[in-house]
Amino acid sequence: MTAELNWDSGEGLLRIDDPAAWDAAYERGERHLGTAVIGLAFNCPLEEASPRIVRAMRLPDAAQRGFAYTAAGTAARLNGELTPELYAALRSAAGPGRRSIAGYAIADTMTFVPFRRLPLWLKGRTIASYVTNKWDTWRSAE
Image 1 (cartoon, rainbow, N blue to C red):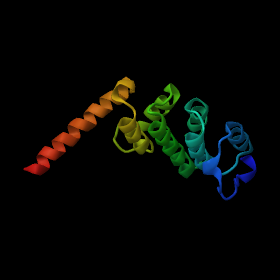
Image 2 (cartoon, one colour; image 1 turned 90 degrees about the vertical axis):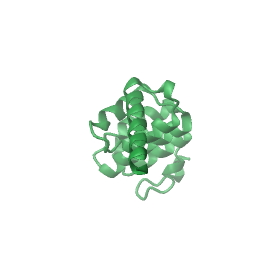
Image 3 (cartoon, helix red, strand yellow; image 1 turned 30 degrees about the horizontal axis):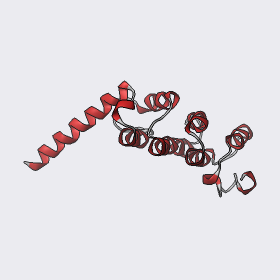
């Protein structure tokens, strides 16, 4: 698979299935690491993809960081859970407001991870979101 990866254009990176290839590209400072980490989320076990997703969340390029959060949301959708490290990274990026770079990943996590498996901070956020949505629905019905 590694021969088909084009780190300059990003072509083929969504098919990456070798965490070692991602690690080597990270060490070389390649572009499109965020794109590739989405590929890892699709093609690797969560335990192997998770540390790379967390690392990609700290990339200097904002767009590539955004793709890392997309990878976290993808991992939640595919696995129905996240690792403690991914939950911690999402929590630190969430901030006090509802809008953050992690917003869609958190929303995917709240949707695709069963409530009983969510960490306490995310359970609270899920309940608050439910109450807010109900309130908004009642207000708009008036």
